[in-house]
Length: 196
Image (cartoon, rainbow, N blue to C red; front, side, top):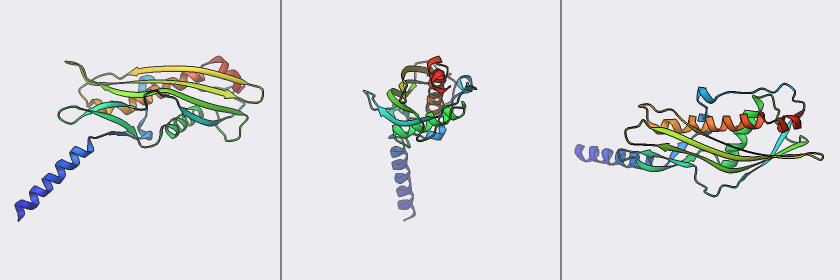
């Protein structure tokens, strides 16, 4: 009787481990950039607030990337704990606010964000440490009664490699991409003029 229970526990454990590696879940709050790509440009001359009206998913491929899990390095899809619209909106709002750009519903300047690419992949190469690589492409549209502006930005980032597990590099690598794309937006002269 004791052996049967032990076998059942072992079977359940194997089943749980097998099921756990079906996806790689990244949580929005884990997307913190690496130190080397965590620069924040704070704007001093900002007078106007923005309102993010909409995030539009315009990606051709609707997946977010992949990592490798298990002893056989099974290719495993990356997913998030929130939808892409919430993921992008929350990240952009937080990133703008720490740069002295207020985001308030009902503001005159309305922003729409088109997401063309957003992915992060684990990279495994023979005789090389495991890494992760991300790529983001977005178009930011800002308009009011008198203003209409659009800016296209893209960035990619590859993590350093060491002996740590490559899947652990997915979240900070994507966080680095998010930070870099907001840096490009905030340092755009035309975008800065809209806020003065």
